[in-house]
Image 1 (tube, one colour):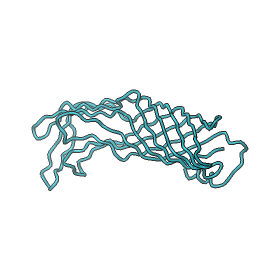
Image 2 (image 1 turned 90 degrees about the horizontal axis):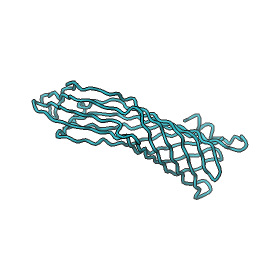
Image 3 (image 1 turned 30 degrees about the vertical axis):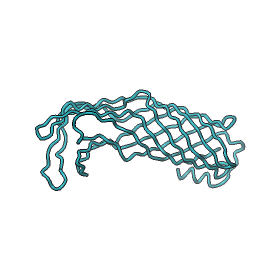
Image 4 (image 1 turned 90 degrees about the vertical axis):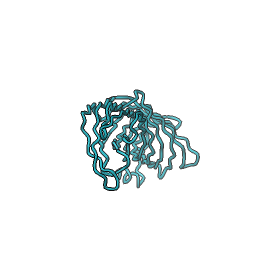
Amino acid sequence: MLGILTLGSTEISFGQKNWEIEAKIGTGNTNINTGGNYSDLELSTNNHRLISFGLLKKLKNNFSFGVDSDIYRFQLEYTFLPLDQDNKVGTRTKFWSIGPKLQKDIYIKPKLGLSLAVAFHLTQTNLNDEVYTGIWQTVRLPGGGQPIPVLLYGNKEIEKVTFHFKPEGGIFYDITESSRITFSCEWGINLREPTLVVNLDRIVVEDQTFQNRHILDGNYFSAQLGYRYSF
């Protein structure tokens, strides 16, 4: 990212500029739907980070077409409520995707404009299927209460490979003839949802048994800051 900014800090003439490279960083949000009779156990996501790189070729009428790739990382965590910071157990989750992208720039001022885009990505996740056989941790209750065990039985099912349709909208400002800063929002629509299903057939807490089902559909929303360099 710093290397691209250095290149864009001065005007370099390559003749007609037909190509664009872009790097973006941002954050995102994805939801988990929970059903069952034990609301004290939640599966949630946090620490969302997204990195994107793209290479596009300029076409006529301010259209561009090319390929871009995203890495979307977040923490997938079980949380026992009432909340205690030591009651979280999670895994680092990553979606990696790549595919074609079509973009249209619309100038509203000489250097300021709107950008509309759509991409179609093949997506892969690092999650794996898992079987829960009563393994959990002792949960500390707030106020110094006696720790209690929470035991999980069931399985986690993963769709390792899927496809995302990604509409995107944003604004841009041309710093120079070759360099541009952008702010964009993107909606990742999973075409093979859900990505993750956790079936907890038995949740054993203090000799009581419950059931839960957690579903991550794989759709997400992201906001990103970017820099584009034309050459």
